[in-house]
Length: 462
Length: 96
Image (tube, each protein chain N blue to C red):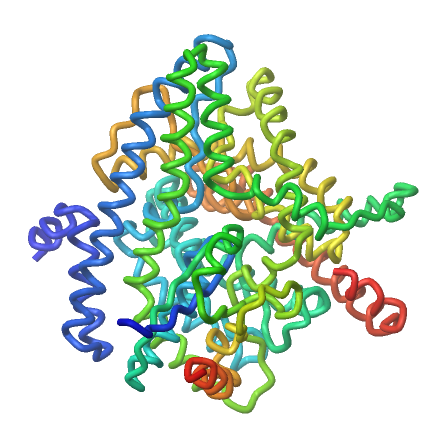
């Protein structure tokens, strides 16, 4: 039996997971035709992602090594963004077990009234799988990987509860909450935001984000940013004009293709996610609950894009400075328009653009440092998924790693079985901080209800 | 294919949320034998897509920006709350 299982696993994710997918589809009574197409799409998604990743490395690798050689700045880890990381996550052999785990925990917590959120965002299950696969790689323990996933599932639901009122104030969409893991970062940003209260003058600056977005919004597009950063790497690598333009165009191509390939994962998983979502929604008819969604229903807030784009040049400078100090090896690239830190900043500051930028600046070094520390792990996981050639000494990194502190603390804290005390202490400290943050936001919510008359102005401006 | 209407859904990356809504609308239309083309796009590139569509499904609060296209909200297709009403609105727009 185990030889059969090992043989099937050995076929690779692009073969093994589609088989699971088709069987799963048939079990939940999908039409055979649709189940087979879903399964095939999943296999195509893996293959396609691998293809683009290989293509990107074939073009950026020489430029990146020339950059390091030419400038002496050791930025050898290339940020490939969330899309390839999602592929790595879905390739984890236990990935699909996270669906029933998330749904089960959610239903139990709702029944016990520990949460008011029903998380129907089954796409971002990959975020939990990703954490679990990192923990599994560090601790070599599958049960601990599941412990990490459970912690993340619970915190996401709590984070959805905690931020619900503030997000409603910003978006005015009733009945929804955001259960995306990026918002857990608000626990780190909240105390910094509180400290900013003591800095005089910070709330006085008034900027019209909408107007600014119309002017600089073009820099938020993957194509433009990929071209610029690709060109920069080649310029500092000492390439000639032809080399610069070609590298820039190829990097832009990869960054535009990544999300397109990721969409294939979504298409493959949509039928299963949909029936799971319908199953959950049916259980709680009548009770006042918030439906937990992915973050994009906030994407209409211009502040997000303005703040994230303004951060870009600073990110590059910080990356270089930190690398000089030996603290960073990551070139921010695919995740350079870093909404991952800006969206929690939006929620914590209530949409104050200046504060969002300040929080972004303070947070950026943390994302770089932790992306650097995870780079060897993400690289070896990526190599295990497919046939991608990554030259020795170069790494695949994930700059927009949601809630980096918690992920770091989980990976190292659960590794206490191998004597990593510091990580465990950090994990406990994070829980303490999260508790404080919950109280801080509650106080704000109460304050808001009292000051509703004063606040209507502000929300309209947004 | 001649009068097939084109519907566009936008979200932060054009991948997860918008694709969820797009798949949902697609299946619902398929069930009622309505011939449409639903596409998920990146909200940052919406400007270059909006002209090519007949109906825009917004998952951000409608009214933030007027794109000059018939618009419905995509949120009900995510939450399941008010989904039939929003789908009726969509069907009405499709008949025009």
